Amino acid sequence: MTTAAIVRVAGALVEAEPLRAALYELAWVGRRRLLGEVVRQAGPVATIQVYEDTTGLELGEPVEGAGTTLTAQLGPGLLGAVLDGIGRPLERLAAGGGDFIGPGVMVPTLDPQRRWPFKHALAVGVRVSGGDILGTVEERPGIEHAVMVPPDMQGVLGSLSSGEYAVTDAIGALEDGRSLYLAQRWPMRVPRPIAQRLATRRPFVTGQRVFDLLFPVAEGGACAVPGGFGTGKTIIEQSLARGADADIVVYVGCGERGNEMTDVLTGFPRLVDPRTGRPVMDRSVLIVNTSNMPVAAREASIYLGITIAEYYRDQGKRVALMIDSTSRWAEALREMGARLQEMPGEEGYPTYLASRLSLFFERAGYVRVRGAPEREGAVTVIGAISPPGGDFSEPVTQAALRVAGALWALDPALAHQRHYPAVDWDTSFSLYVDQVAAWFSEAGGPDWSVTRQQLVTLLQRERELRDIAGLVGPDALEDEDRLVMDIAWMVRDVLLRQNAFHPNDAISSVAKTWGLAAAAVATARAARAALAAGVPMARLGMERVRQALVALRDAPETEVGTLSAAALAAAESVAGRPAGSRS
Image 1 (tube, rainbow, N blue to C red):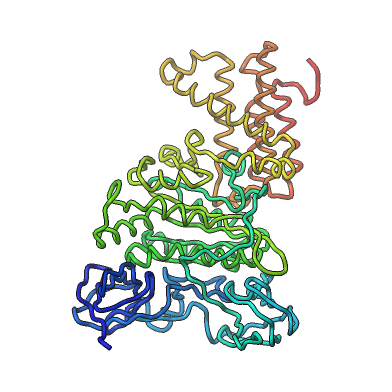
Image 2 (spheres, rainbow, N blue to C red; image 1 turned 45 degrees about the horizontal axis):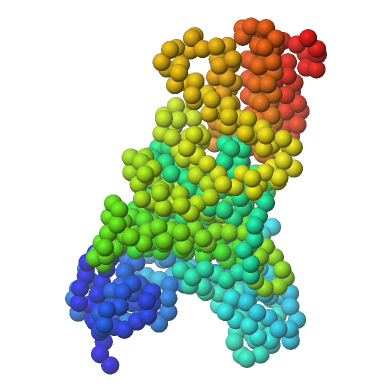
């Protein structure tokens, strides 16, 4: 049999001949056995994208097909891990070979030496199929990891026992002799199968007031977060990782600068989950593929992230997947497409950019999981986008808008004013508002939808008045219009602005968000009534209301109820009368 050899090298692309392989089959390239993936087969010539640095490859070096596709190793030990774009654990790579990844170095994602206490949940002789829970492992304190039958297996359970096992040890077997393990593998580019896709009425509660109140995302939804340089995309995603109501967080640093990812890697271990008091890393998986790493691995990194997210979803957990940023992934597609000499589309991106992005975003969802016991899980995707020059008309942003259910558009002007999150409430939108309104009305206040709409109308009117005031001056406005601008400024400064470093303001509960919103709307209503009754603007107690709102905003959760009532009372007495009095 003739051995395949390299006949062409172009950056991360290698052509080998004669090599017949399946599309997306893995291959070992060169004497250093670099890992690659077959992306084109033209007769005897296979084109391979290599996930490692190809510097030094020579023509004639051997190439060998691996006989399998790119898979993710899934099992206990993922939580708290920091992986590269193809699933190699960076900590163990550094321990074994130093700070730089050597060529051809492959380390399994899960530590094969660590042993886990497994408790079986099924009896021998029962029929099992893909997704059935065999038992559990306590992966982290308070976090049960369900060990499942792989999706492509079924049969009668021949043996299963509790005990301490490594991920490579068999915990049992089917009657036909196939072994069962704590870990399993799944092809990263193939969605894990589900029983049924469900409609959800529950929101993905972010802890950020501007999102939860104005632009909510349903659990299992997809959201695009475009913003130019310095608008705070990374801070937003870190805030979501810390404060969002999710069981598991998967964070993918795709093509970001090395120093920025260093901040993530040093900052994440210090973050504390406010609900449990334990480190956020206990429920997180970090995937790091910086801009100086091979571009092919960058393209694969988001598929590793979504596969890990789907795996925990199949255990019945609510998973948040953060991608920073989708633009770098699209740029990897563009670079690979150029080297493959594919027909370029708009701005050089491949013509299949929109379809590839939509297929990825469709892997988000709230689903009924396959297997017993019956359970539901969700994967919510938050994808940051870095449009060049902040231009939202560029192809990646537009492709994301077609498939995402929400847009959190970041405004550089707000960022320059130190207003964070720097969300442009005129451009942003959410298609999930009606879907989650009932949940927010029950958890927050009965008038949640009405209050939200009144705030949106107030902010829209304030934008119009600012344009007018820029032409004629604010003193030329009617008192009612000046009142709108004053209240809108208070809403923007106290309600929509949030300090990510304040211990009580970094994460805002639904109750606190509702208290601030209800007080702001009550202020507008009472102040308009006072003006109509002839009370001059100078006598309105707006500063008293603002102080009450600031006190509520900065209060610990235990004082929210009391201070919400105080803020509402201040709002109702804005004309200088005690709350509840008659004129």
